[in-house]
Amino acid sequence: MREFVRREGRGTAALIVWSSICLTVLRLSLEASNRLILWHLYGYRTVANYNLSIVRVKPELVVSNGDVLKGWGFIHYLIGVSLWIPVSTIALVLLFKHVTPGVV
Image (tube, rainbow, N blue to C red; front, side, top):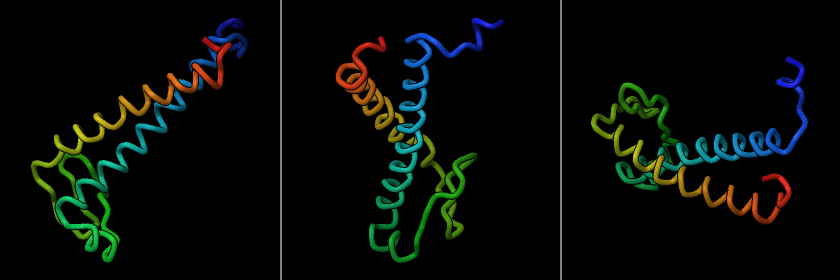
């Protein structure tokens, strides 16, 4: 059990960096997909003037003004994933290649 909880080695550091980058980029991509959907449906000025945001994602997207966006959940998912995977891959490659050359 001691070997399992010990925080030594390059693999553990790589796992911590990988998970923190992936989860951070996941959260940012979800926020970006929220904004993109709202800007598409309401327009930039309306979203800015009324401080609109998506308050609930499941089972349907719900906007802070009470509107339910039926049928936009899959588009929201596609935008989020299409942002998350390439950005996290590019960030990890650049980070592991240039900043932490001895980790992997």
